[in-house]
Amino acid sequence: MDKAVRDAGIEDHIHFHHKVVAADWDTKAACWHVTTSTPEGNKTFSARFLIVGTGYYNYNEPLATTIPGIDSFSGRVVHPQFWPDDLDYTGKNVVIIGSGATAITLLPSMVEKGAGHVTMLQRSPSYLLPLPTKDRASAVLNSLLPVSWASNILRFYNTFRTYLLYTLCKAFPKRAIAVLRKITEKLLPEGVSYDPHFKPRYDPWDQRLCVSPGGDFFQALRKGKGSVVTDTIEQVTADSIRLTSGQELHPDIIVTATGLKICFAGNIAFSVDGGPTIDPSKKYVWKAAMIQDLPNLFYMLGYTNASWTLGADVAATLIIRMLTRMAAQGKKYAVPRLTESEAAKMQTKSMFDLSSTYLKKANRELPKAGTGQWEPRTHYFKDLYRVKWGDLDSGLEMR
Image 1: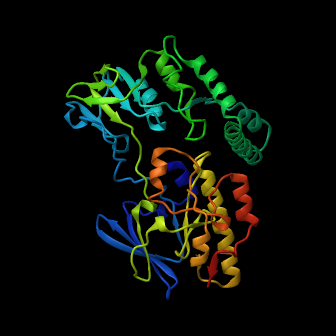
Image 2: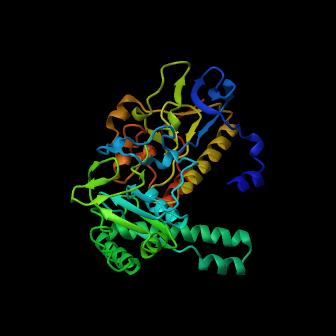
Image 3: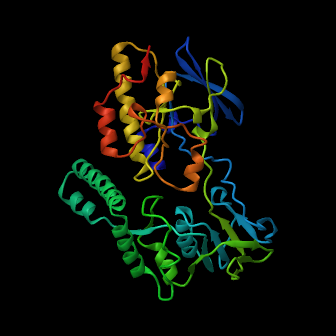
């Protein structure tokens, strides 16, 4: 990322150590006044357009999870969101509580960096697919074609491949489960069973499908340095984790990879003309990028079933088209609007189509999706077509 910033020449345009705490739209001036907190005190910036690229995680608070007795543990308890620089786990016995992407990434990484043994303790498993680290198609195309041609072809190929996997899993879940099981069982060491440790209770892509680069997770298991325990916690004591089955684990360090808390736009307080703070969960999202009643504001939201950056790409395409159109028509601002009757008839949807607990909780924090211009993103190629050539008039007020 540092290299990309330097190569693009944008480092001088970044204000480091500035936290945006509030943004108020000034209708008369047709601009946003953005308040930031800095080590030197608050500073205010003004801009006609505001692009929010904060993601949807709360970077100050982890997801609250009840783990019986965790406060009585005498060893170190770490949450991945606030990883301490001084954590030394060399030769230590580590238990990671959780089964999502964070836990699956941490286990092989900690094994490789010298942990004595790392156990992933999960209530229920996730689907896990090994991802090759070497792309043969990339090597061939880059050797035969100009870089720009190869890059465009590979982008299409990788995007199409991702959506093909997703579509097939949703259309033929039983067959997908059988294929994933066969792949997983080939990589497991002797003595480690697929059921219950790698057999989720849901169909593929009802929740996110995790990937293991180069199968590093399975390599850690085969080395004997990593293991998986599927059970529930009865009680954490000063020196152990007692499980419902009666088994006990004796970690030196506990890592609570139990999920991330969701929030909208870093909890920035948005308002219009000095009015009350707007509750984003009461608003709909126009073309999955603009928030109802907030002028000239674009929210960068990615996909849950594909690369996050593809969603940013769709939003950026929409922004460019809208800025070009507004300049040509002499308009100062654009704001998504819904009449009361339209809102009453709207079929409310979630911005995400997964059943993960943390995403269900996110519905209480994030704006809503609906139908028509307010529908959520579902498919990159379809969404890209809509923002490039679709309707830009319905539900949008320009002045």
